[in-house]
Length: 349
Image (tube, rainbow, N blue to C red):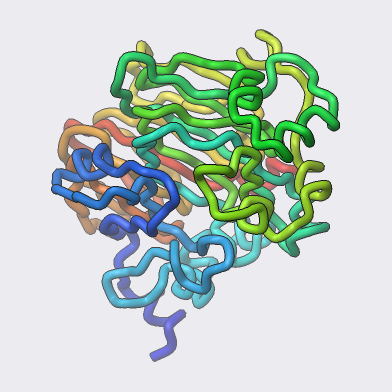
């Protein structure tokens, strides 16, 4: 039996996935373990790549999610893209899910870094996708949980180059907007935006499906500039940086505060995120339209019922990949869920 036929003849259309935490260069992971209800004493497991078809930069398999039958999710999607993703999605994005979801628990402050745009990625990295991302804050700890987003004022290219060449961490971090956050806050991070995440901030992160980072503040985090700049020279790498200042109007267009919204479905992200990904917070009984998606259960317990009548039990800490073939599914029970989806086909035109 072919893999495509197997997918279409009764394979699970919604699958709970275990933690997938490739080792990183920074500390964290306790909040991920607490969410999932287990104990994990690893020091460098701050990222859980959920339903990932993306590999870590420079790796062949690290970062990929494995299905219960032993296959990589990436290979299952490639074998039956319309089953997993839907015909309209495949017409626009091929067999790419066009989405990477992570749980990210910053056990220490992350370095100042940014990500390339689609155009830069096509020209220099051979990729259709750059790495625009968004953060859904789901937990905080410590006295002052903050994130850093965009320069406060315009910065000349030679100044950025000098900061990077001398690894002036205090100047780089001090030049950014420091933003206090709490659970329910969301931040859209366009490609090119210099940013960092402070210690004690726990997020569900949506990204374009790449692992491209230009690490401006690499000393003390990474071994050398080759790994910091994706193998590019410094001059080329710094072309990715948006050196424009982000004033209050720009910041307000990127940041949302949703903690006090208690509707059954709350759109989480800024309007500018729509061409890249979608995210909603769902509570209680909610209908889901057919779509590839990722569910992260933040609280409660219940079920996901797909239109063929198969139930999947859900509980706090469940992470689930949902195929387009699940059809018009429904969440039932006392649940709080972050529902992540790729962009709607046609939204980038």
